[in-house]
Amino acid sequence: MANSNQPKAIAEALLAKLGGKDNLASVAYCMTRLRVIVKDSSAVDKDGIKKVEGVMGLVEQGGQLQIILGPGRVTKVANEVGAITGLKIGEVDEAAVRKEEIKAKNNTPFKNLLKKISSIFIPLIPAFIGCGLVTGILNILVKFDAGFAATPTAKILVIIGNSVFWGLNLFVGVNAAKEFGGSPMLGGAMAAIITHPNLAGVTLFGKALVPGRGGIIAVLLVVAFSSWLEKKVRKFVPEMLDLFLTPLLVVLIAGFAALIVLQPLGGLISDSIGTAVKAVIGTGGAVTGFILAGTFLPLVMTGLHQGLTPIHADLIKTTGMTMLLPILAMAGAGQVGASIAVYVKTKSHRLKKTIASALPVGILGVGEPLIYGVTLPLGKPFIGACIGGAFGGAVMAAMAIGAKSMGLSGIPLALLVNKPLGYLIGIIVAYVAGFAATYVLGFEDPQE
Image (cartoon, rainbow, N blue to C red):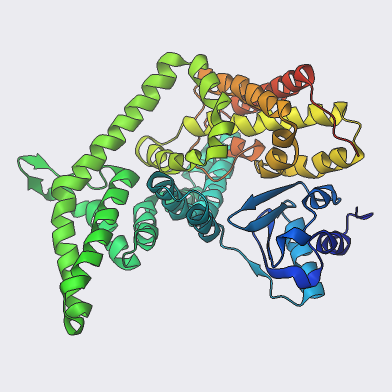
């Protein structure tokens, strides 16, 4: 076991447990994980890796060992591993890695679709966060000084904060085309067609067209079709005519198909989702919030939660906020409370250090280190975390708290919701309930 929490010491200890530096075939890292492929898996001491000081957990996927170290630390340790082994260390594109993992392990059409959807929105997260925080800060400034809203500075901040949603259809169109195998800019063009403001002046079959109808859902449908059509067209168009004939046929055929069939269908789905969410949360209230938040962590473990991203984005774009996000964010808060209970009860020095290093990022909404390093391996604390999240979700639903942007979770999400104080109350409830449930349920304390 490493006797130091310094990156170099952790790297040396990990290499010893991985069978030595010559046993490594490749090394990369993402936001929280050091991703290693070894030449001889029999030389790896997996239990030893889990006991290395600073390691929060170990996951095996697709022939790859993923050592969970947490944000910040993983980059430093990866660089030290590179310096010792001489291997080229690269930062992994999280979306690309997830795509490869699903091919290697769970290659089912439904899960592949969810991974594609996730990969479409992951690159947009920095924009959601940046613009969302601008909006949150502006809201705080206006509350302290109502007259500030009329100033040129405030008006510029409104534009900056809203910019990601103003261009969201185009961004999604480009990314969706990449995932569906089409030309990115054709995907962007298709999104622009169904968003174009001049559609308001067109009447089709006795009904006026609505620019942007169907939001993100319509864009995904339209671009999925145009990308499929593009691949089909390229098969029969002569190579010498491909450069201009293929895009011409795609935008014409897919453009009319979009406006006549796909956008109305997307609008129907989008409207149905919005109505259903409002009805379920509005009529079910705290009970609905309790159930949604309480079952979210198991949903995360299956990967099915990725299908919610376009729903959040569409709700924000069409209704101004998503009430689902604050409810589901309580699952992470429940984990924080459960982990604090473990910290209080455990006699394991190593487990205490793992929790102490993972808690700050857990409070900020990055729950992966706590899931894989604390609650899930111990079993009962994972149930305690679900219970804590359920109570927090009940508060969110009862107080009708909605998020005006996404990309953040944990305490920082308070800057993006309509009722910051109510959100923080829900966070505290989830912490307390997660702590109490885990403390009562107990767990088998690991040996040093």
